[in-house]
Image 1 (spheres, rainbow, N blue to C red):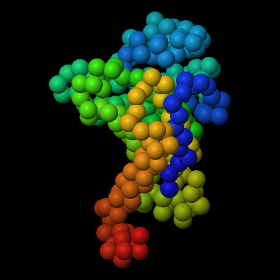
Image 2: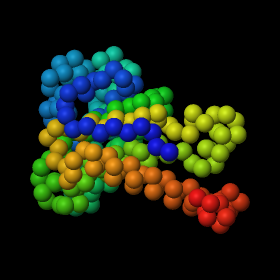
Image 3: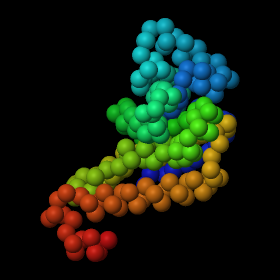
Image 4: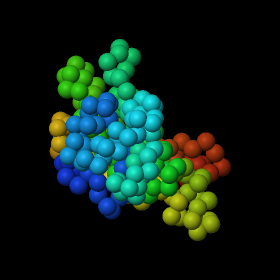
Length: 218
């Protein structure tokens, strides 16, 4: 099972009311300002935050902001991608950290907004060509609930806890260049994540639970 997933690549309605948390994945303050420049209240809120918290744009930050859905705003910076040791995993780390913080905050239907990363990064290394998919899969990975937890939830009539999120929306900046259309991207990431979750279930470390017979039945 997966939470309901939606992916879009337009800048309209970033601050939707049917979400309960906004998680922004971005590389620099300039990228953040560029994508949210039309949302004056948002920009003012970030400026006020910068004045009292020097960690902004350096590490993940949670803000109680009434201008975003659910009053939960999470800024999860990617950091530099310029060094020889940097790769697409830094984007995955930022997405996972954002998802983990949203879960701790009690969000059930978050919206992830992916700001564009520099064009030179995309052209310099083809490994970044699927960075949007990497970010989406990282967020979905963080929402996975282990097999033993799901079985316990079933026994205790707590199946609602089998997913950490009810739904997840991913909004891509309209300036992001993707290798496929949005519908294909949604189909691909859903299939990959379902396969990953099946492998995690099958590879669970308890031999009494995931016996050869249980593997065959799946």
